[in-house]
Length: 131
Image 1: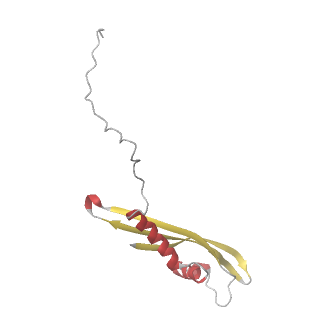
Image 2 (image 1 turned 180 degrees about the vertical axis):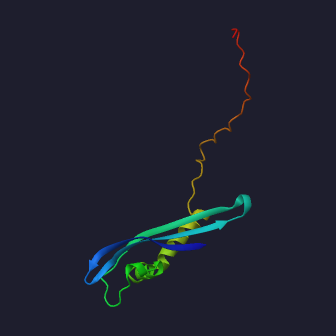
């Protein structure tokens, strides 16, 4: 299974104290995929979770906006309430439930199955009127 974390958007205050372009909110997404089978039986399953994380005004060291990395912002999210393990477990469960559904819908036992359609070869159209 492949798990990928992304930062999709940053909300920024133009000025906060003596700092400029201060990130106050990050919108994140956790995507997961798993491929099963091979060749004609290959299937890819996916799951996702997303959310936002807000941050207090910076105190101490400050990284200029242009120098931020995605991993740095993700680390801020994890340090401010985004439970990385729980989110990844949720995405994994979504995928596992697609591979092995915990609930399925079966046909009603008292309703007979619909008959298979019968294909009829087309017959040429014959007309008594001259063209």
